[in-house]
Image (cartoon, rainbow, N blue to C red; front, side, top):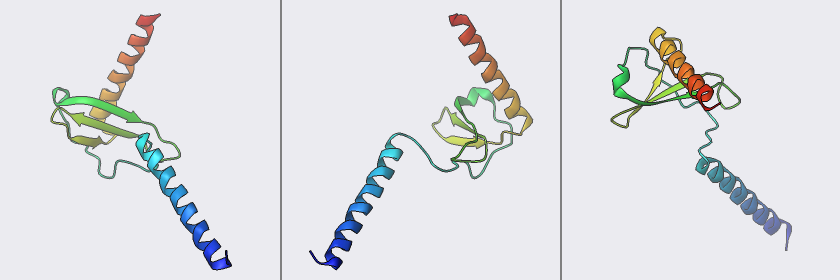
Length: 104
């Protein structure tokens, strides 16, 4: 093989490796960036919320993220510094602590 062909084969192999690695991270549900761009600070009644996901800051994102899944299925990013969101997070943490103590 000549030098040009070797470079092309190497490029194709590296491209395939990069794409397949990216796909495997995505299939694991690993996001390597912040998920919340716009954050909602207005009060949302807890009866409308089905699930709340707390994502601590880390190498993927410098911000703590709070993502609420509504009963309609829509996901909304909540402003973690909003007073009502702080109360919601505290209640979730206390419930999680209570449930872990109950298992002992």
